[in-house]
Image 1 (cartoon, rainbow, N blue to C red):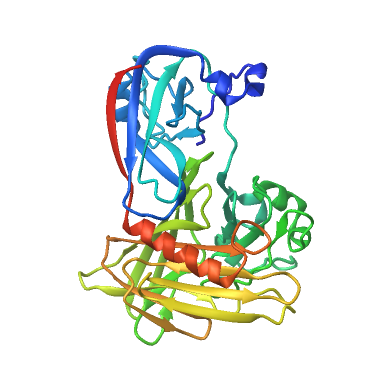
Image 2 (tube, one colour; image 1 turned 180 degrees about the vertical axis):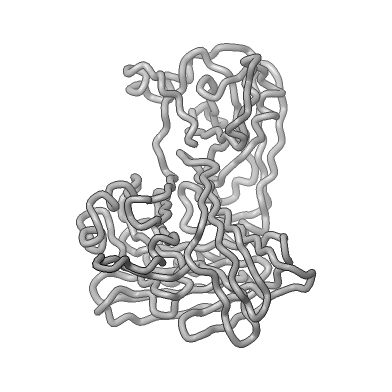
Length: 411
């Protein structure tokens, strides 16, 4: 559902953003003020504005004919989602959209900044894709997603199905989450699936799949903990993409009912994948009969390293930042970190396969958490200490969401 203008003049794509912004169409502009309370830097902070509010201040603005500028006049990449794909705009006034999304790198000590949004009389360029996801029917029903930092995938029912007689087929029953360690900023999901399993398990210049999932929770899979045992779903059943880059990708995965110590559970996960972040936002909603609280668990695989890597694994449990994390040093393929931040967490547990962080849940209520990973061979985090510091700062950011205010006016 990516919203892109397909009728772009070829020469426009070669223009620098600063030139395309000079073609101002009207005098109206929307001023956006964004504030927060932290002293630390907030790189890749994602700012969202309901399009209905943009339309209120900039009537008849169209998604392909606007410019978003920072306080210095620099044109920023942006995205407009369409959360209601059947919506119509018969009057052509620009109302059938969802949210306007863009990002800003807050420097340390920068607690407020201002942006402007204005209509232009040219067509905005297509911006670089930094967040992407899709269903992979050509590889046994996988669903894969990525941003410019890290990639992931999880598995559909086709992988769980038994192999037909006389057919060689991989069979894996798990709702765990895999990691694809990339070391390039551009999208690799399509390319890696195209070149195939035996290639993306080796680093041929863009990174590799070296993470072990098996029947574990992988990096951020969920389940219900009964105090002694973890009860989990099998592979996802249904998928839905709600937004797909260039700045943010949003999709949902739904799971068939499973038994958790006598309670029938279904689950839907909504993933929000933002450019520039090592952790994805995941909103899990469990449905079951009865009003009693259950204990949800989010897990990290105890044995996540690649084969033959003789790993040294450090595990951190920090209730102050409500996090569970690992740092895995491998013999030849480099170190990597994994993590979960679960704001509602109140304790930890483990089973034979997983380290677990726990939180109470109620039927129909959303449990929000964040999960992801880092590889020392890509990005700006090279050590366990840096990974721990990143997680602490991200936990603080989640507790202090930005505030956005709007003001209309003339240029």
